[in-house]
Structures are given as structure tokens and as C-alpha cells.
Image 1 (cartoon, rainbow, N blue to C red):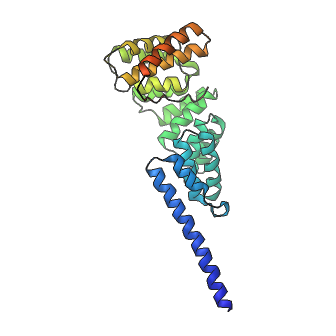
Image 2: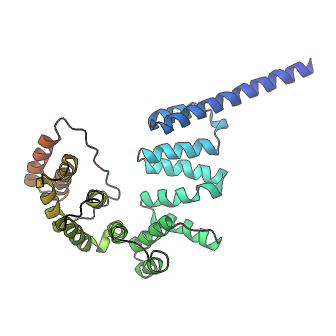
Image 3: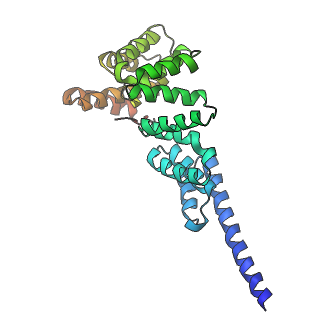
Length: 265
């Protein structure tokens, strides 16, 4: 009789484990199909006591893809306590995207103290985080020691991310790229400038030229109109805001164009 109850208990535990695995697999399938909200719904069905390292990693990945960096950070931090080594680089980027330069730099410092290899992408984050923390001498050391082979495109991106004293330089460089008709990466850089609020009057002039340039794609031109209108809204120029917002609404009609989110407001 005793063996019978042991068998029943084991069978019950096995069924719970199997159910959890099936739910996790469904969540993974939804994630691979880019159905991030559906994946999160599956994960919410897993009992809290059965949540594992993999559960929190997948939660973090879903929130990251949805742009909910704060929630992604929470999930990754729980995962890091369960398996510290495998999640550390995700935390560096997430803290950075969440605007927490101090925590991002702290993890990089711990990696250095532990003689762990630091990737070039993390070195770029380190450079920008130091620059934005007013540690410009240290930032330049990172640039000289680890990022000396960057091309012009990467240099512009780094200047955008550390925009506090570089907006004039960046806008001038972007204008030059446009005038030279080197537009293959211009859209990404213009989007990045907007996302990180790296703009001034030169940037506004460039956006005006782009939205009127019929050789460029409609999506690029429409985004530039949106950027112009919101910049004028931010500086409380109601008249210009309404003018460009109306142009944007007219061009946007019937189209589905994704506008990049602003990161550090």
C-alpha cells in the first residue's frame, strides 16, 4: 500500500513537471514566431514555485523585444541570481538602455576584476556610460585601447549615444552624409539621433530637407515629419508643431510606419 501511494505521488509530480515543460515550450515557440505578448501569457501560466532560470530569461527576452526595459531588467536580475554567469552581458545592455550608467559600469568593472572577457559591444557601452557620467578621460582611454578600429559610422553612433556635448558635431556629420548622397545608413542614424534626443537647429534643417526629398522612401520622409513636429512640441512652439503635425497626418494616411521610441527623455 505504501509503494502504491509513492507511485501516485511520483506520477502526480511528473505530470506537473511535464505540464510546466509544455507551457515553457509553447512560450518559446511563440517567442520564435515574434508573438511576444502571447509568449508572456504562456509564461504567466507557470506556477511561481516552478519558475526556473529559463523562465525568467524568456520573460526578459520578451520584455526586451517589446521595449519594456524596466521589466526586462527585473526578469534578468532574478535569472542572474539563479545562474549569474550566463546573464551578465544582458544586464550590462539593459541597465544601459534603462539609463542606469552606474550599474552598467559596475558590472563591467566586476568582469574586469574577475578577468572575464569583455566584448566590443560592451566596450562601446562602457565608453558611452563613462562619457555620460562625465568621466571623459576614462572614456577616451576605452576608445584608444579597445575601440581604435571603429569606422566612421560607429564613431557617429557613439557620438550620438554620448550626445551631451556632441550634438553639433553629429548634426554636421549627418548633414554632410546627406549632401554627399551617402544615404544607405542615414535613416538609422537619424532615427538614433531622435531616440536619444541628440538634436539641434542643424538637425531640424536636415529633417526638413529629407522630408521634401522625393528620391527617399516615404517611410523615411514621414518619420522625419513626425520628428520635426514632436521637437517643436517639446520646445513649446505650438504653431510650428501644428503645421508639421498636419503634414505628417496627411502623408501618414493609409500607411503603417513604426516610429522609434525615445530612450532617454
